[in-house]
Length: 306
Image 1 (cartoon, rainbow, N blue to C red):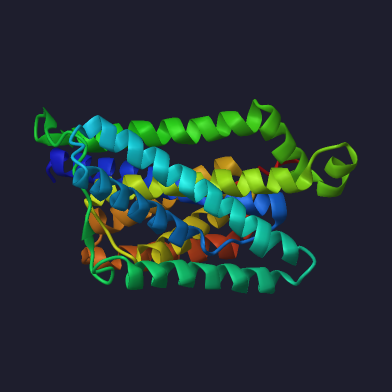
Image 2 (cartoon, rainbow, N blue to C red; image 1 turned 180 degrees about the horizontal axis):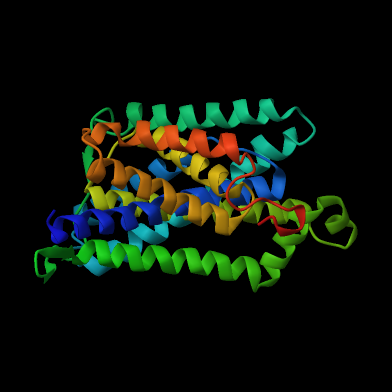
C-alpha cells in the first residue's frame, strides 16, 4: 500500500482527534464540576461555527477583505458569544435543577440542543442545507515523496493542540483552575472555604462552551462547510470519547478523542468497508471496551476529577 496514502489517513486521524478531544474535554469539565451531562454541547459546537460564518459574511459585506482580520474577528466573536451562552445555560437551566433527578437535567440539555439546532435550520438563510465555510487558511501543501501535507490542516492541528494545552494549564496552574478542581472534588467544602460556587460553575460552563466554539470553527475550516445537524453526531462522539477515556478526567477525554478518530481511520484503511461504516465500527468497539472496563481507560478517582 502507498505510504503517502497511509500517511494522509493518519494525518486526517490526528486532525479529527484534535476536534473530538476538544469536544470531549468540554463534556469532562461539565461533568467534573457539576455531575452534569450537557447534551446541548454538540449543538453549541455547530452554533459557534455558524456564528463565525455569519460574522465573516458581515465583515465581507462591509468591505473588510484582510484574511487575518477575518480569522481574528470571527474567532473572538464566536468564542466570546459561546462563552456567554454557556454561562447563561448554566445560570438559568442547570443550576436551578441541582437538586432535581439527573435525567431532568439531561432532558433539559437535550431540548436546549434541539432548540439551537432547529433555530439554525429555521432562521439562518437556507439553513437546512450545508453552508460553504470560507477558506481563510493557506491552501497549498508540503510534499514529502508521495505524501502531501495540507498547510491549513497543519495550522489547525497546531492551534488545536495549543488550545488543549492552554485549557490544561488553566485548570492546573491558575487560581480559577484551583477553584474548579476544588469544586469538582467537593463542592460543599469548597463553598465553606470561601469559593464562589456559582461563579466557578458559570466560568466552567463558559470555558467548555468557548472550547466548543473553537472546535466548531476548526471543523468548518477543515471540511470547508457547516451543517445545522452536525452537532448531534459531534455530541455523541465527544461524549463517547469522554466516557471511554474516563468521564471526569481531562487526560482521558483527550485520549478518548484520539482513540475514536484512530478507530474511524483504521476502519477506512484496513477494512473492506465504505467510509460510511466508520462510525458503526467505532461505536461498536467502544461498546466492547466499556463492557470490559466501564470506568474508562483512565479510571476516575474523585480526587482527580477535572
